[in-house]
Length: 172
Image (cartoon, rainbow, N blue to C red; front, side, top):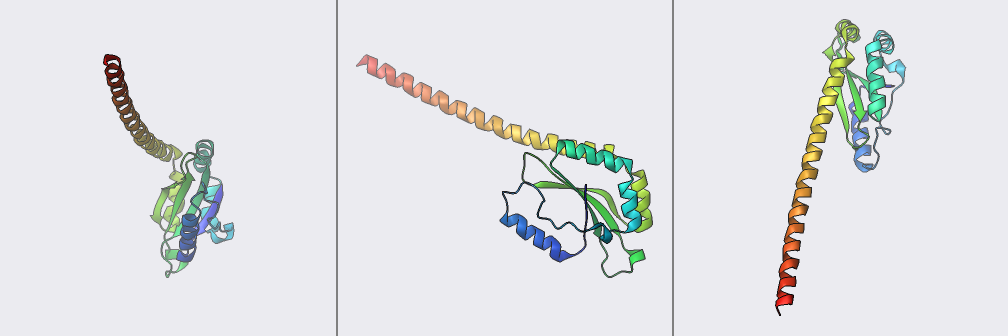
């Protein structure tokens, strides 16, 4: 699991610029991964030893390409004890270049964040991710069905054209 902290706008815009110029890259390998020292030690410890987050990690590594947990700092100009944090999970579909971002724990202060981590259930997030995948697959399948039916109608038109042409030639 890659653990990172994005706490400056510069690094986010830098990543977006790199991603736009490297659309062929199917993963988030260009995103700057911060060292663990940027995380609050209590939150980092709670995340590393949380069985539900490990279960989510195992699921995403099996089904998808990339997993990154991001600790977002929402209040930059506030003293550390009043800062609000949220944790987001970023995963990348193996069959699609664009990644998905899901908020695991909403913005809250450190004490509430630790309570959220203890109460966190991977089952809810996994169901949410699978629902997104079903929706994605339905859209993809409906597109394929439409193009297949359009192709069949073109083939029927071509077949009718050739039948008429053969009839004309045999009548001559």
